[in-house]
Image (cartoon, rainbow, N blue to C red; front, side, top):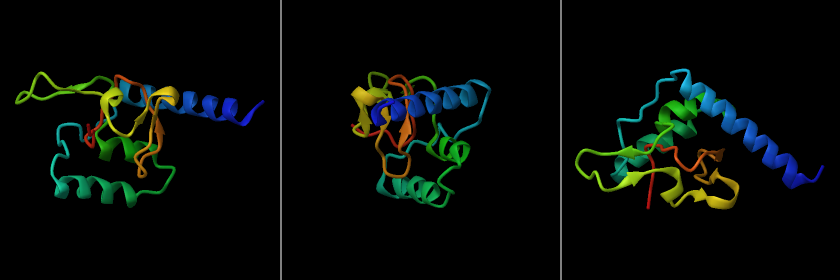
Length: 114
C-alpha cells in the first residue's frame, strides 16, 4: 500500500471517529466563536495545552459541529470547513497547526477563517 493511500485511510478513519463522537452528542464550545485576536489565542492556547492524541479535547475546545455555523448577526455567511483558509480541499484536511485533522467540507469550528 502506498504512503498516500495509508494516510488517506487514516484520515477517513479519523473523520468517521469525529463524526461518530459529534453525532453521539459530544459537547463542544461551538457557540463561542473566535473572531478577535484574543479569542483566537484563547482557543489556540487551549489546543496547545492538550496531549496530541486528545481528539475529544480538540473537538471540544475548537467547537466542532457537523453542520456549518451561521450567526444571527450575519446570516448570509455560512462558516463551513470548505470555506476556511485552513481547509485543504483535495484531502479534506484542516491544516491549522494546532488541529491537523481530517474533516468534512460541511463541518465547522470556532476558529474558522476566510
